[in-house]
Length: 608
Image (cartoon, rainbow, N blue to C red; front, side):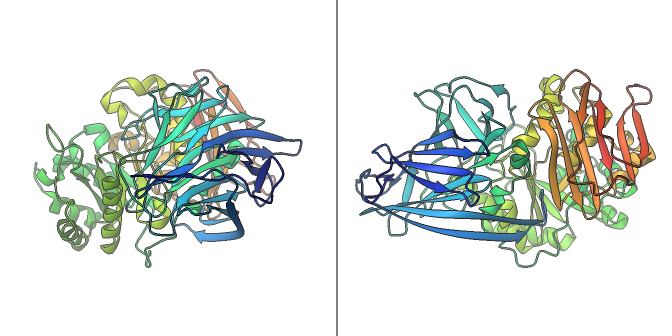
């Protein structure tokens, strides 16, 4: 029979209505109610006052043995403060650091404790069983005021949906994936997600329940563990949300000792323009040639390369790329979700450990740099275990990994830095599949920097100047800006070779020098769905990328005081002319403009 564990929210020596836990700077407060409700109110203190943000309205875990419940006056609490620092090979910041206060609440006579960490930029907690009990479920619920604006993605195992702006009550029988962004007011936001998925865990998501605006943490399937993944909310201004590294801060450190072979970079990619084009050796050669001309380090050869024809096979393609100095990435079907009725191959090469080791060893011997693995089967424990095994096996053979048709990042990019990107996004690929992205892409693109891309690398496959099966109506400036606005350790350029070769020399030259791992990231301005302007630094070069998510012209202020140390610099501005025949305006500037105009669905990129 299951054991139900409820955290006691008070201590015998407290007489106040609630016990307060604090972040190191005192701004974030967790108030543990001094009653039997076992709930926590999360508040935020600014210069003027303290305001309630949301409640963790139900706290508890279920275990495999016996029946217990506790919500009385017999809890103990310990507190300790910690500071962390680590280096990332990719992501929004190279040198990461954070501080937190950690509180452990243990109910007397029970085997499960609640560990809660308060950072200056968020709250994280998990359930732990330090004794023999195995945790098999949890009772966590979040209660958020219905008038809060929210940007949430309807749950889909591939995480390929929009993040529409909504207000109102949570609707029963609705299911949302991570991350979920809420606007609490007073320039304060919360981004809810999780991190620290290990073997034995399932991933989780949010489900509406029968109370107004309350969300339950729902596991993706049966699981058993000694400690759950971390549930977390990044808290602060939009700038603090975008710049936060909390997802990796709370994740285990790198388990790969030698990372010298892990190299971020840009790749050419065949699928977007030709769908099953990797079967055609002559087309594959064009994308290898494109990578060579644009000075890109990688080419991704997508599905059906195992049946390549028209003058050559995959060994010929790998040899041709090597001769050009280009490293090859190869697509694989995970063979867990789509294996029949037109599923692409290669199939059933990675499922068994001995087959996986043999396949990855073969790829390493052939000089292949990495794999893209697609079509996973949801957020179950079996899928999480499989993903971790793939990352570990690939690391043993010095192979980069890109997960597609898969769950969103939850911190694995720190623990396994060979994870260079993850799809989990409604990306440019959808111009192949349906007309849905054409009218909504600009708004969607201006929402992703505040939602999906906050939590980890995002393989959107950006920067398409021509059309695929369905047209796009974003401008050239908008598309170019996405290469720096969106973060992915390997950034895949999705358009046809002839489309890139037709662009001005300044644009073509940019691709070969485009960083995909950043030393620093700053939000300059923006609002979900409206516009986004982000500055990213690599070494001594800054890239300022901005997009307009609306159908109207937009003027934005570029407050770049944080990145510009003096009044002059050498910079190149790429933006839209508004002329269909000659769409670019590209010119050198001696200082960053204080304001910039963007066309409807337009954008710009400034390279310092």
